[in-house]
Image (cartoon, rainbow, N blue to C red):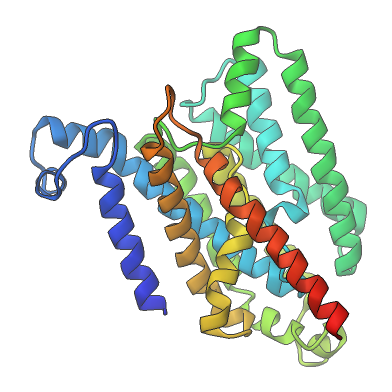
Length: 325
C-alpha cells in the first residue's frame, strides 16, 4: 500500500509539471529537470516545480496531521481544524495582508501564519489547562476556531482598501498559484519539524486505542502527547495554511482512504495517510488547472467539493452504525 501510494505521488508530480496553460511533453519536462536552459526549463523550475513540491509537502502535512489527531482523540471525524491552529494562522496571515503591507508572495505571510498558530496553541492550553481531557481540549479548540474565524471576518471588514479585502478573500479560498521556492524554503522546514513531532507520538496513539486510563497504565504520557501533537500542528499546519490559505478536508479524507487497507492501528496509518494526503492535494491542484475558467479555480474549492460529500457520508455511516448497535 505504501509503495503504491509513493508511486502514485511520483506520477502525479510528473503530471503536475506537465499541466498548465502551456502543456509540456514528458521529454521537455525531463530535459528541464536535467538543467536544460529553454523556455520549458523556466516554466518548470520557476513556476511548476515549487508549486508541485508545496502540493506534496502540504498534502502530506495535512494527511499526517489528520491521522495523528484521529489517533489522539480516538474519533474518525477529527481533522486539523479541531485545535484552532489553521484558523489562527489564516487570521494572522490575513491581518498581515491587510495592515502589514505584505503581499501573498511575501515571506512575511508564512512567518505571521506560524506565529498565529503558536498563539492559538498557547491560548488552547491556557484556557483548557495542561492536563485537560480530550473533551475539554476539543471544546476549547472549537471556541478558538470560532474566535479566529470571526477575527478574520473582522479583518476583511476593517481592511484599509477594497483591493486588500478582495486579495484576502481570494487567498482564504486556498491556492498554490504563483508560489515560489522562497515559500518552499521558509515553510518546508517547519512542516518537516511538525511531522517529526506528530510521528514521535505513534506509540501513544496506539496505546490510546484502549482508553486514556489504560494508556496511562501502560506508560503513555497522555498529557505530553497532547502537548506535542498541538505543537506539531502549530508548526506543520500553521506553515501550510500561511503559504496556501485554507485547504480543507485533506486531513479528514486522507486517513480514511488508507484505513481499510492498512488496518485500524493508528501508528501504522501515519505514513500512508501522509502519502494519500500528498497525492490528494496534488491531484486537486491538477484538476484546478484543468477546469476551464477565466481565472484559475482555487485548490481549496476543489478539495471542499470532494471533502464535504465524503464528510457527510462518514456522518451517515456513523449514524447507521449507532442505530444498528
